[in-house]
Length: 447
Image 1 (tube, helix red, strand yellow):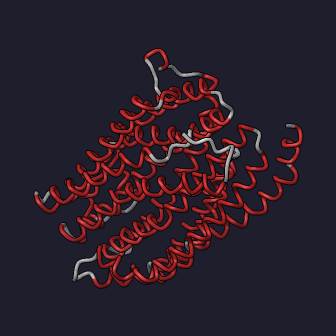
Image 2 (cartoon, rainbow, N blue to C red; image 1 turned 90 degrees about the vertical axis):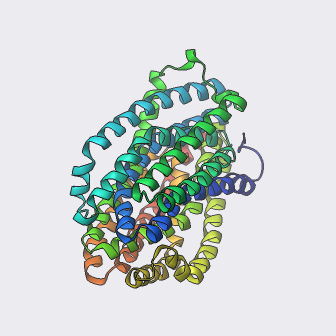
């Protein structure tokens, strides 16, 4: 565990973010390996089917993980204040509430897969494959929630390293099973989905076993398994808004995906490939943001307001430094990366992806800044601000995609990202300075 109320902030953020970056990269490897293996061994239609299905599942995953994030902010505050009994009560409350929610998502997903895919304009030639993939992934959803919840609680007490080890093991297993099922047994999208579910189950069970061996503050006995109504209210107020905020992005992406779907299989496949690259590029920015959230929340709970604002400055500096590296790497490797996803005959798909990444390399600075601001506001408990900003960003992005993509192709999606992130920053930055002058200063003086 890591107490971030003492010691150098930059060191805390780096020590926290680096393992989290590795863990998230391992998690993204699930989807990337699916795409590479399917694209090369099952064909463009299969790759497009996975790409069409993924935004739907992402809504469910991020919605439930929003509950976990809101709960982890509360746990961080309790941990920073030294109230370990409250940490345990919050853990039990969030796990029980999340279990009910994840069961509801599973039932709903299995029942309405077909209508959902019809609503987002999935082409007939890939409809059945997309439905099969999505239903299998839904079956593993309870374990997806369990891993996300347990890893969020570990991070709330400053331990971002432990989940990485188990996610790494699950990632290796996923790669092996992908090759075995898709290439060896020729199961196509079904094989990729089954491999992902098995990997999710493995990471969740390993993480649970570790907590019950080595993390007493998070260990729950049978008598602890009850919902604290007061904490449930706070969790729903915090986590519910965060869940909405987390869901806004993929809901908008479903609309964006429907616009992409209407452009044909080649663009669907290209968009699936470049969004994998976007995910890898932005994960370190998001991980720094999570570190900022935990550091801000712990110091806020401890009353260390000077360290709260220093965390924002330090975190944004790290975000900019990372962008310089990822911009150069994307420009240098954009063509080899796209060739991983494209078979020899898919030249059109490859060029669309290269053109998109050429623009995005320079734009990756913007999500670094927005993620940093979002992490700060979450740590301050300003969940409504993060919800509004995310809704603003994805709404503008969706509108610009609707206008530009049918006219100029996939690069229109890149310019849409710029418009959305720019609007987000135009609100967040002035709002921060207003709050610091008129809102937080009064509270800090009273304390």
